[in-house]
Structures are given as C-alpha cells and as structure tokens.
Length: 356
Ligand SMILES: Cc1ncc(COP(=O)(O)O)c(C=O)c1O
Image (cartoon, rainbow, N blue to C red; front, side, top):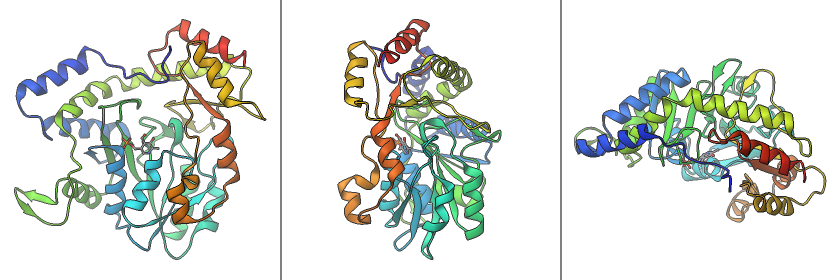
C-alpha cells in the first residue's frame, strides 16, 4: 500500500537521536535552541519558540495575546480540531466563518460581518500547506485592531507574496509525525515580538526564569532535545523534501482528469502537506476510497466532520450554517504526495484515480 504519509527518516535522524541519548541530556537544551534558530530563519522571524506540540503552541500563542473568557476568535470550521480546541482551552469562543470554495481556506470577505465588540483575534489556517489570503485578512484585522494568529501547522516553508507563512501574525506550526518536517510530536511559535516570545518561553516552562522561582502560572509545554534533534535533521532537508512534494503535486495536477484538482493562486507557493482533490457532484467518496485502497493507494479525508458539527462544539456555539464548508467536507479526498513516492507510485495513483 502506498501510504498517505510517511515520515522521511534517514541515518541523520537516527544518529542525531543517538547523540542526544549518549549525552545523557534529554530534556530541553541545546538541540531545542538550535532548532529554534533554524526555524526562525525558515520563517524569517526574529523568534521561534519550541513547544511539545502544535496544540500547545496554539494554546500558548492565544494566552500570550491575552485572549481569554469573554473574547471571541474568528476562525474556520474546516480545519483540524486543535485550531478550535485551543480557543476553547483559554475560555474564549470560536466564531466560524466559511471558506473559499476553490482554496478551502478562510474567505476574507466574510470576516467583517463576524466581528463584534468581543472579537480579539482572527485565526486563519493555511490548510493542506496552501497559504490563505493572509493579506486580505490582515487588512480586516488592521481596520478593527485585531490580533492574527496564523495556524500554519501544515504549512512550514509556504510563502504568500514571497514571504513565509508564520511571519504575518503570530505563527504556529506542528512537528507531528506526518507533517512536512517532524519530530514525532512538537510545535513552534514564530514572532518578531520580543514580549510575546518572552511570555511563551516563560509559560512553556512553569513560569520559571530562575530555577524554582516562578513568576506566574505556567505549564509544561517543553520540547525535549530528543525530539528537537530529529527536527534539526529534518529542517536541513526541508527544501529538498518540499521540492519533491512540489514535483509530485505538479505531476498529479497535470495527469489527473477525473477529479477536481487543487487551485493555487498565482501569489502563493504551497508546500503540499496534502494533495486534496474534490469528487464533485454526487460521487460516492466511500466507494472511491475503497476502490483506491484495493488498488494499493492510501487516501485520507481531512476532515469529514467540520468542527462546528462536532457535537461538543455544537453545544457551545449552537447551530451554525457554513454551506461551503459542509459541502467541501463531503467532497474532499487527499492522495499521497509525500517525497518518498516513486515514479511508479505516481503512475499507479494517476491510473487508478482516472478510473474513478
Ligand atoms: C491545522 C492544524 N492545526 C493544529 C494542529 C495541531 O498540531 P499537533 O498535532 O502537533 O498538536 C494540527 C496538526 O495536525 C493541524 O493540522
């Protein structure tokens, strides 16, 4: 079976982990600091702060901006649940806006109507590694004096107008095992703001600057050097792996005829965390998945149930209607695009998908 994703692990990752094990210093230390420096370079930001996961990074970023009970955060429902959960963790309320039909990302035209006097932030998501229309979103944020927290969990290295995602607002990334670069579990916050970075560093480590003197209530959101060592080895190959994803995506774009292939705006450089097609009309997605799986092709549906339709969230936000999100959630299907695909794999994917 061609897997939908596959961690790209080489001797570099294995040796890096062994070195940390041999050093006896496993907790947050020099490897984490090294990773943070490299990550900030990739994003073109002054700071990068590593955390234990993308979810803890989102949680921390919201706290750093002082978002809490009584506040509203505008986001999308068509995302991984962590985007929304993090808003709930801080006691704020997620306000959902619909997505653009072609890019699956937040529709900037809908934001203004969702703003109230309780709105504090906008959290757009760069879904599947494709930048959302961040310039248009920033313009609305500027007019209403709102913070932007970019959920760039899936989009490390992606660019909008030539500028890396995660450098427009406060950026949040995931290094979970299936991500374009990974550490098993891990997250990152990127910012140019010294105070936000300082807050995140403090609160990820129990509010501790001097050993056992705690300046405020904090958490254990630290990344270990073991995890960071893996990610450092990965970040060294980020460009190479992204290029391969782009080549694979270009091939699939050109060769697939039976499905709606992804639309890429001219001013963005996506990194193809997922290659997501649409089975338009009334085609049976379950049958398509079965057919492809039987032919040896792994697939993914990200995400079959949008956040606003998850029962525990519906109880909080009530009945919300997001027609584009709801339709797209029924039509999307992700195909393998990862850098370890061979030409034979790509040809099999094209042949089988074109039979659908
Ligand atoms: C869009 C999005 N946001 C947040 C997260 C959370 O990251 P993590 O799984 O590292 O906690 C993910 C990870 O899958 C994601 O895809």
